[in-house]
Image (cartoon, rainbow, N blue to C red; front, side, top):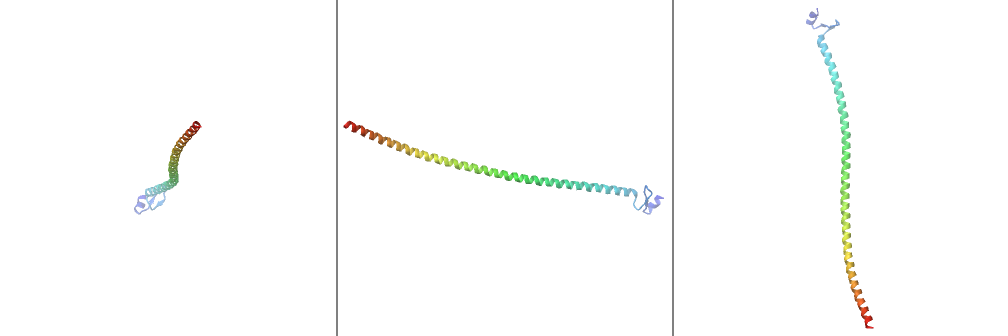
Amino acid sequence: MSEEFGKSGLYIDDLYTLRVIDPEIANETNELKDECERFTEKLTDFRRIIDQFANIVEVFAAEVDQEKMRAVGVQNMLKTFSKQRESEQQQIQSEIIEKMVELDKLKIEYQYLQRIESEQQEMIDNFYQNQ
């Protein structure tokens, strides 16, 4: 009898219910539907994981950018300190040269004054000898 219904497009399933679709095809369709639902859930989970990963990457990228900026700032400070130190060194060298020039002048003046002192002492000695 079930074959007669099958010829007309009607089927009887295991529970003896009249069906328009072959029970095997209905079962496969239900299995496909369940599989599609599981696949959709997995896709939803995958999308959620991807969104979380994207958020983590964005946070990490922001931290990396912040560290880059800090590193650039430190580099600039080091360059500034280096230039400042060079400037101070040049200034100190300039002061040393000025002091050396002043020392040379004072040495010449000292020699001149020693010569004058010597001449005056000689004059004094001569004066005492002549008296």
